[in-house]
Image (tube, rainbow over all chains, first blue to last red; front, side, top):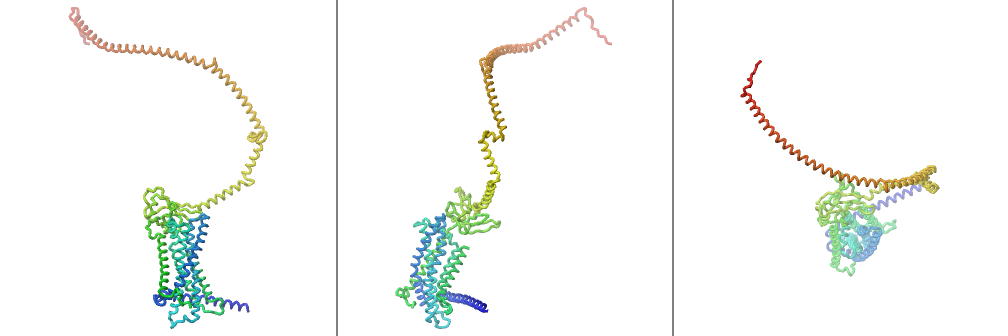
Length: 267
Length: 319
């Protein structure tokens, strides 16, 4: 009798958790849709909103751009060296460049940029939003007004997304150049074959998947942490904070996007 | 708190300019990457089409290279099935590289044990007419892995045969045992003869036959010496034959002289015969003259008889 009651309560708890999980994702999706509509509205990029957006773009991207590019360049050199030496030792040096492009440009750099921006910008932004919400600074002056979203939320979301896109693009270009220089040296003689290899790797399908993946990672990094702190109400029975739960949601989404891109590219 | 501008971000114009620079940098990089990718994919390069026909498209992927002498000169654009069920590999060849492809070019598809499948073009005669746009060619397939099942099957058969051969009761083992037995018998008193004949009695017969053959040869040798003396000795056949030949030569000379004389006689006889022939021709004229004279004499006698007084009257009595 007692055991059946405890099993029943466990089932009820599991069902409640699953329901809350789905409700949370549904709120995040609805919030993302509202923000996207605002982001596509021209009035968002005028007057004080433009100043706030510019401030967040510069603050979230400029300080980490150089450091992240340098860090990516160093790690890329190590990986390029490992791949090239290993390929040569197995007599497969003709595939080294293709492997470097696939491993670094297609997979590692976007993932690293997303994780770096999430930890460096998105989570602090989410913490700021949580603090603003706690102070009541996000209360709308009138019902249905989007002014707090435009002034405080949207610039942070756009800056997070933009930061991921810019860091990914710059790092991919740097990695591609480093891979060429490492394999061919400072000469233009290998450019035709390198260009051909690049064209072979970036088929239309792969290019589309790469673009969608980068956009998806940017949106996930910009949206999910802030949406989590806004819509995950603090509950005393949960041990984890809203920021931590947002981070888990973000990693879960990044994992989904990465798996989806791998499936699209290689299956 | 965080809304307070830092000293570096004090003015909105400066903020907007820096943000615009960052956005511009992103757009520039994305546009440059897009153009480079389009160039790498050969979008800006005029190309011609080549269709390779094969029975099997395994290992061929869209985007893989067609190489000539190790250099990529084309790229697989599409793979499709024809109405006959053959595989059509549609390849874009840039115009500047199409000069390596000729009407007599041969195309091969090789699948290695490790690594990619390779499409290769071989042009033996570069003076042939260039390959036309949209040309269809049969591709020759050289598959290293296709030989493996046959190789494994044959190797299995070979190993089975070897196993059969090396068994203790196999024919090879029995043959080797016999060889060993034979070598031991060769080492024996009769040697190889004993092995050949199988028993000592027959081997002894052969030895005896060899001895008798040797004796016979010695006797034949003596007979040959005597025959030599009979034929080539001082009183042998050969000197007498030589003398007979000399005499025969002198007899032939005499016969030749006699024949010359006979020739002269024959010439004379031929002249006499000619004279006789001409004489016989004159004899005919002489005979005709004699006949005429005799008829004249006969007429004259008849005339004399008529005029003569004792001439009897000519009376004709009718029955």
